[in-house]
Length: 486
Image (tube, rainbow, N blue to C red):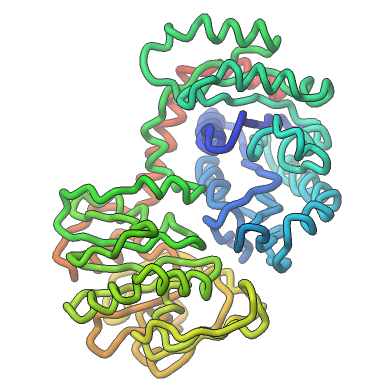
């Protein structure tokens, strides 16, 4: 049977996604056919597969690490939060409506079967499948019906390496505590541990690693340093954006409001990497800076709710003042919808049924529909030879006189989006607009800034190479391979 290993963690944000991506690249570069897998993910940062489905962004990056296109089998169950108690459920890339936490819990036994089936399909085409868990298996209150950690590992017979984050502190207690609370059958699935995010002299924690082995009996698989290259990979959790600050060294200032339903926020990674750009997400409680050159309204998982937040925060007033001063505004996906005259959700596709006036900056209107558009797209900026490539991922249809002035022209000749008569307000449904070097350079040149050469994907690829090289030196790769069954 195909070799497999599952990377679980002592909590969220301990670096599981990055370690899986690094190991995927490492074993791929050793000549193996490798596939990533995550049975259940929860994230509003998603990616579109070539067959028109959607999966978590982290699994798409891990597929890139394997040098293979992403498929819906790599993340068969995806939850996209829309409120504190509900989420949109995606099964094998397709939307299956909005579910409460209680209703989803009742659905889990069937979804475990879906996850195992997708995993077996990946096994059939690979030498090695590297699986990522979610949260922590030590959350034993969630063990019944679990499909994300030990529930999957035991159903599929996949050995586990448990990751502890030493940067948080108490890593000995986290790993030994997990050993203590897990039931014997779950505990037996764990074959070793990895310490992650260590800063400083690694010899200073030699005794600590020895104590973890003594307390747990698990093999020490190594200790990874703080991986600076991980910052160049798309983030999966919007929590990390709270710390995003304006660097203050670039030629132009670009800002985006950080609303609750923010989605597909890796759209902005290429801008953050540009030395001539000061980019910042503006959190609630702060006004949009008056000296911004460009305000970008990002994607949203709950457009009407986030539009209400824009008004509650006074950001609508800031945007109007920005426009009066001659500033530019760009809306992406949900942000594009907000720029129009009206948004209607009569069937409650994204939440409670309702409608609201938009910001009135583009002469278009949007009606939410149950059908979801999911497709890779490419083309050029309207009126330009600058090429873009990205994807559409949205519910809703937008129409109106403003679409006669499109923002983009797709490869098949279809227009996308709208531009105001004076050219300073624009919106489109395409995510990934800044990925290609030519499109990014054209957009930044209008603001008076230059752009780095090369597509952003090449920087992500270089980061994956750097992470893989580091892991090859600090982890016991031979022991990891034996545990996986290679």
